[in-house]
Length: 228
Image 1 (cartoon, helix red, strand yellow):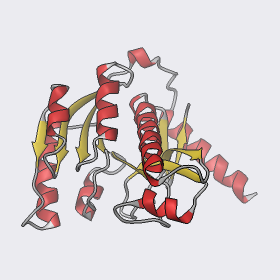
Image 2 (tube, rainbow, N blue to C red):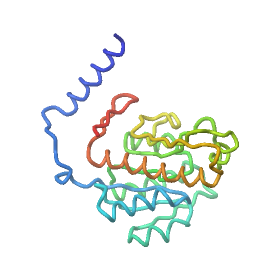
Image 3 (tube, rainbow, N blue to C red):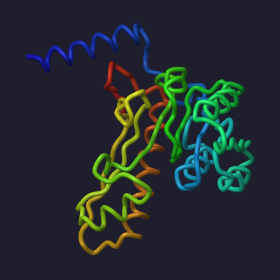
């Protein structure tokens, strides 16, 4: 009975949010403006840039912001603005203020963390509630740190995966938008696991962005309803 009540609550919340709206064709939707944040890993950023270029995502990338310069060449190859905001020798809060000032210039619908490898302070998360989308490997909390795929290889895991979710004040516990896994076995080495992991991260993040950009995601408390 408790599960039924929860389902009814979600349905009522959706009905209240959508009201008399009818289904809109994707071609009729206005493209969502996004700002992408990254650090140094290029795979998710490159995938999103290519998908936007090929018009397979309903987005317009306004800017790429990073705390390292290594993503600049990739970004500028797609004729997108790149903003380097150094995090060294300033506090996390000061760094966040500089990022927010840059983000607000573009007034994005969503902020995508494409392997952005720094914690965001609470004021940043609060300001952009239900607008920040993250991607991470699904080994958390088992394998944390800089090289989770090496750790997974050493433990002999049988699946790898990725999760895309909204960012909340509770680290890596925001409403989940999309997940996927790949089955593996003992024949994969650590480098192969890392390559496969990057592939599934790209796929999961791009699907999450697709659903969001097409208004297919409804947030209710700490859950999402995704109309696929």
